Image (tube, rainbow, N blue to C red; front, side):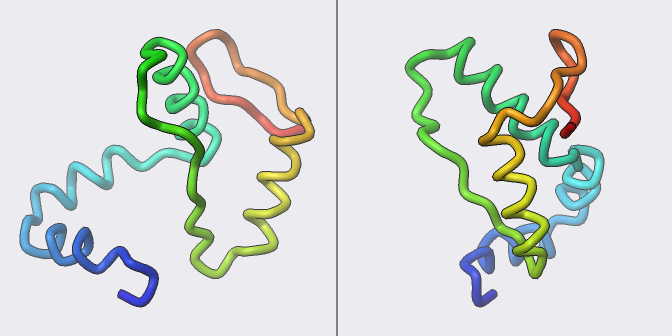
Length: 86
């Protein structure tokens, strides 16, 4: 509630089918970022400018992951797959 996701959380709690859909959509950070990038490339007028990370207590891990991606220390897993950090 303190980090600004209260409205989304309250909505999910009222709608259990949405909660199960959300669980099926769970992906890793690399899958999410790859999907966002591919979506922006496919739709150049997209309003997505830059990502926002919620690290939920994993600040060091999040910063390490972002730094590796920013420095290009990753390998794409095919044209439609996610990527793996090196």
